[in-house]
Length: 499
DNA sequence: TACGGTCACACT
DNA sequence: TAGTGTGAC
Image (cartoon, rainbow, N blue to C red; front, side):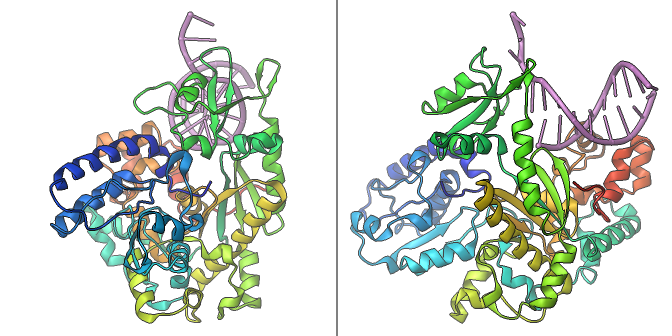
């Protein structure tokens, strides 16, 4: 199964229904017009795609005709864009000239990868859409972190960050705080950290143990006796059918029986039991296998049963010394698939089109911020490690690559499965400014809710309007939480333990 | 019978 | 110290 965006698979069942109703209404709307075009749909984002179709219809009034004759590659019929036999599919739709097809990507995948695949298939008209506000979670190519014109000086930009402040009365305090934080995060090179996160390791472990489960929708359950047992892990294949541990608006999690109803072909695997309790040692030792591989490149810190931080500072510096990254040959292919937070995707395609260059040629430039060159090296090393992990353990993993653990952790799951995401220094401000407080580690629970309810804080940007002293005044001097929030996570999150 | 068990950490 | 609350997975 190919990769989808973090939301796409979860939304599949619901979005298909809603997409269908959108399609229906569009057909009705345009029903009295002659059909002149055909849309070939490749998407598991029907919600967004239908929005787009509706928008196109509005923009190109009278020329956008929606055709019932669609091929949906979704759910159990999912085929990744790059694996589709487009020639045959186009012919099935009576389309002979792929250059007259408009491709619309809204799938959270690497534009570089998609661009290559689309060009190879003969497509020449491509739109890349993103799913986030500009300047927050758009991703751009590896090449841009080598290009000084894309490296916005994080210190020079500092005054602009005041725009995100909603409490002007403490601007100066905020500026001082933000300054220290940004400088800490932006200059923290000694411990270039990254976090690699094993994805749904429980099901992956079971799928490795039992080859019949590979590629099949699989869940790990416990307490099989009541309603099929509680789900403790869901494979990506199963998520494609709408199986999920948490059911929105219902406090209890989905159980085995419900999973079977949603996905009749699903495999339920009982978690190992020892002395009447779930025994997770099997999954712990799987993590140990991965850590053993990662440890070849730097110090490891186990963060949980399926997460580990890896300090790649020394390895990245060594790589930079040996290979100055001034030619594309050294770029490891997997690394070129990195999702890099930063510029809007649209700029990339237009530039690529204008320059007519080979994609690989865009990956390297000699002038770049040293810190981000280190990050780029980190991205390459991580990509190599992920490939090695896959080869040696059969596990896929996602990773975040950033200048500290907090940022690495934050983005490690932003694109998955089996993807990695890089946070250039220039993207830190925008990322944090718009980040909902509850997404921040330690603020996911009651404290985060209090911040929202008591102080009206919605984003980390809002939170930065308050000084540490102010927050202590409101919530007590206690607390390890603030100490960690303002120090450990924000700045020098060096490795605190090793495995 | 009902169903999130478990671990880490900070505070009391 | 043991117990409790919180947060994360």
